[in-house]
Image 1 (tube, rainbow, N blue to C red):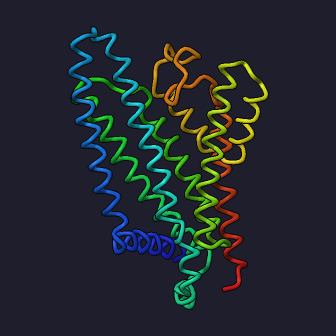
Image 2: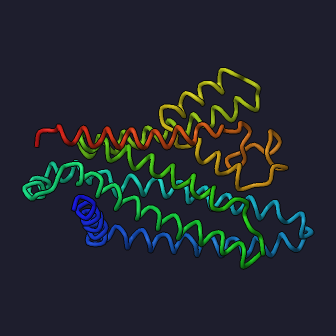
Length: 279
């Protein structure tokens, strides 16, 4: 009965995004994004194949694919915050949550149901955008990105980190404060990731340590860096190719384990916090 209740709330969460047209707007903008990407890649493909050999053309194809996946990663993180930032705090402020809790539903079932519903929507969004990018590049150029499944799994884990932060924050903070916290933590992780990469290029251990500390506070950008390193051949990794899509400082596999534990602990904290909040 408990599991069925959680799934019911998850389904209601998905329907709520449909009712508010958030889902349809996201899908429409996602399709528009893929159209722009497809047109851009087509014209780049024409010029690249005119001047470069098939082997040499693989580098710009890879970089353009990574650019699309990088944009997808950013859009997915923004989507995770926007659809969930008011999921708990908004219903508390409007007293909608009180009506729901008058029924034989436990508080933790509400949080878990919302988290599962949003996680499902984010997964669909990831598959639409990243799948579209990979398919466009493959159909036009015959180029296949390396380690697709594992790389996309890491991108999805990053979105789950941000989603869980937003859900947990909503149990105690107002919608505005919760959104500010989620975006600022993502900004912290983003800047920390760049500090670590530049520090690795300059052989500055202090800068690298600062980047690692930022990743421990919010393990978001480090997951994209790990995914990016998996998407490309080892021959392109290193200082000479350092940039937003190529990794100079390789994240350890321990950070993946840390990110999973981060989500689990933060989700447990959200359940505990909401269970003890006065409504």
